[in-house]
Image (cartoon, rainbow, N blue to C red):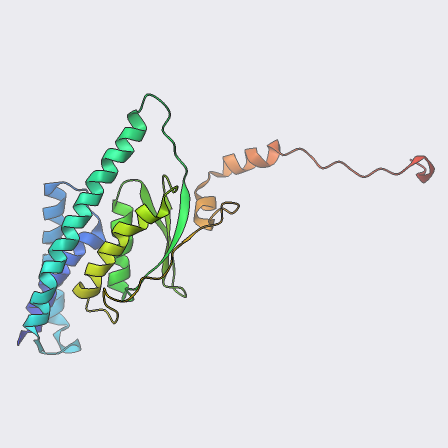
Amino acid sequence: MTRSWPVIGALFGLIWVFVDGPPLEPEPLVGSLLVGLVVGIPLAYVFRRLYADTLDLRQVLRGIPYTILYMLTFVREAVVSSLDVTYRVLALSEPPIEPEVILIPLRVQTDLGVTTIANSITMTPGSLTLDYDSEENALYVHVIDGRDPEDIVAPIRDWEDYALVIFDEELSAGDPAPDFAVYPTDRTHPVLKQAVPETEREAETEAEPPAEEATGGDDDGR
């Protein structure tokens, strides 16, 4: 057992890097970590009465390898996605792009766990967390190419496996992950609708042909 507030403050500093979502460069990453430590350690000390005086150091140490694994898998996925997006931008022939919105139910349930997963998705090039459904505990994720949704969800499930241990969640990595679903293609997610400029929406409305008025026969007096 050890005093809990220094450990909680240090963990806050590490977690803040994922919550803040800095660019994947040394200076922003180190800067974000320092901000997390400077804020997290004093706050942990001030609010130390809200949690136990001592902490099971074994549980904390158990989460450290999973934190490292989380960071490594995230960096790997970010690099691969960056290369993929760069190829699509620079390709001489028009690359196939089929944007989709995928609904991904989560096993992590704590606010910090959900926020970490959501920010990791947004920090990965080619994907964006649009919304969170608290009733379903699910994220709406917009992807640049959704023809193979299983490929997109797989790394997110890996992050979640590690997050379940890091945040000492109720469920574990051995519990089955809920099925994901592709958002209906004939519907536009409300967040995407809001992202369309008002002028474009007006132009689309003006472009629609006016409905023809019903006319009567020769005997209706018209």
